[in-house]
Each structure stands twice: as structure tokens, then as C-alpha cells.
Amino acid sequence: MSESGVSETGPEADPEAETAGRGACARLVKRYDPDRFLLAIAAPASARPALFALYAFNAEVAKTREVVSEAMLGDIRLQWWREAIEECYAGRARRHEVVRPLAQAIEAHAPDRALFDALIDARARDLDDAPIESVEAFQAYAEATSGGLIRLAAQILGAEETPDGAEAARHVGIAYALTGQIRALPYSLPHRRTLLPREPLRAAGADEQVMYRAKPDPKIAAGVGALLEQAEAHLTAARSLRDRVPDAATPAFLAARLATAYVKQLRRVGGDPFDGRLERRPPTRILSLMWGAKTGRW
Image (tube, rainbow, N blue to C red; front, side, top):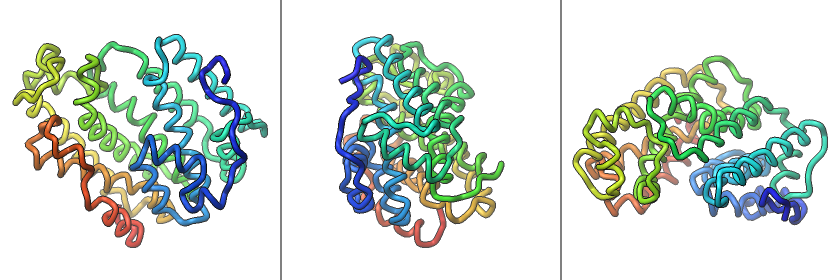
């Protein structure tokens, strides 16, 4: 174990196991990010090892806040990943069960390194307990994290990126991040933190006092309703560009179907993030992803 808290040992990459969704990266993604496990499975078999490596990298970076005891250690962990990415692009790879297959994916597909750097930099925001105040600040965070990951996945899938494709990824990423942060409220609010923008919540009467009680409240539900409207608007904007996104990118953009399913589920419970029915992910999401992958309709 290095001082970053990241293990630098692990088994060699096994492309066949990753293709079947049973390799080291696939297992990590299935445990920490089951939605993106499904997105990888929905992709052509030949792309799965690279996608599992990408999504495993994202899972490792995203869980930084949860695995460190103080912000300084989180900064060290993120710096470890910055250096690991730099080495991958330089043709070297650390002995790590995620870094090695990620280096292979980078060598084979040459995704935009700037997207990796922006994603890691944005994750430093997770270490800050100060709230995100404005919608614009949240959108910038979601664009670099969730949106950037969609763009990287599309590039790994062999889709040539266009300005319209990047804009569509931005919209889907913001919508997916919004629904994810809303669903996480029962777990984040007891720790007095959430990355959701405060302005729409306060406008609905859900100030810090209301939010940090971490209990069902009509004001929280009203604020969630306003945020769901934003998510729906971003999904509509993304889909207006769908015809200008290469078909090869479809498995990456299927995150839009997941976000849509979560919006509908939250609407059915009146926007109450504490409703116990939300503990089960929408049961139709797997069939929806299969249909989207088959038809190209994300």
C-alpha cells in the first residue's frame, strides 16, 4: 500500500474476464458503480475491457472522500491518480489492477487526456465541506465528472467527437449527476453535506436547518421537484442533439436512459428522497438499456 492509500499491487489484467464482466475492474465497478457496470455490459464485447478500466478508474477517484479521514489525504490520493494518468500517456503503467488495463485502453484508443485531468481536478471539490451555492457551479462540476466520463467512454467506443456530441454529453452528465445526488440525500445529509446546488433548494424553503434534519419534508420535496425539472430540461436538450451523435457512442449515452428512469421514480414518490421505495433501483432499467443499445435510442 502506497502513502496515497492506493494499492499498487494486483493481478495482471485479464481481457477475457473483463469481457464477460468478471475481471478485477468489472468486479470493482459492479460493487461501487452498478449503473456503469450495466453501461459497459450494454457495449460491444470488444469494448468492455477498456470501458471497465475507465469506469473502475472513475470509481476509485469518486470514492476518495469516503476512504480518507481528512482532506489532505484525499489530495494525496488524487495526486497519485494524476501522476498515474500522466504515466499512462507516457507509455508507463504502475503495478495496479486498474492502472494497467487503463493504460492499455489509453494506448489503444487515445482518449483526450484533458478530460481525465479535468475529472480528477473536479473531484477535489468532494473534499470541501462548503456547499455548492449556484446551479452554474454544480453544472461545471457535473460537466467535468459525469459529462467528461461520457465523453471518454464515447471516445473509447471509437466515436469521433463533435461539438454537438460534447454538448450532448454535457447535458446527459448534468442530468445523471442531479438524479444521483438527489438519490444520495438520505446518506449524505446525516453527515451535513450534499453537492446539490443550494439556490433552488433555498428558493423552495429547504434551507440548511430543514435539509440537515435529514427527514422527509415538503420543502425538500419541492426543492427536489425544481431540480428534477432541470434534469428533464437537460435530457430534452441532449436528445435534441441525438441525431448528431455518432451511433458508436450509444453505449456511453445510455446514461440518459438511467437518468430518465430515476426522474420518473422520484416523480412517483412526490420528490421525497427519503421514500423507502427509492432503495430499489427502477426494475425496468436493464430492459430499457438493452432496448436503447439495440435501437440506438438513448
